[in-house]
Length: 120
Image (cartoon, rainbow, N blue to C red; front, side, top):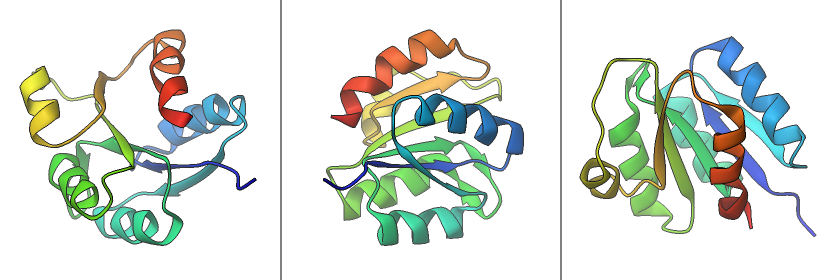
């Protein structure tokens, strides 16, 4: 059986380390990108089951990038995250074809409960 891949697209190295710990505990392979360009490339190459996408990234924004990826691969789940003071509602999440949104910092227990079903 092929190991599930989660792609973290975020330019904050501390956030990546946190996500690495979370997903290793779930027996998932991790890949990372720090720019929109690298995130798009790795999404196409690796075909991850889940992508964690920051809103503010070098080279573009996470919302538009998420929509681009979903238009190429409907099966991938994308969760958008942001530390910025943005307001996000269910309509915006649906508009960009994302599975969810988490405002940083967020509770790890709640996050794991949300992502576990997406990994199956």
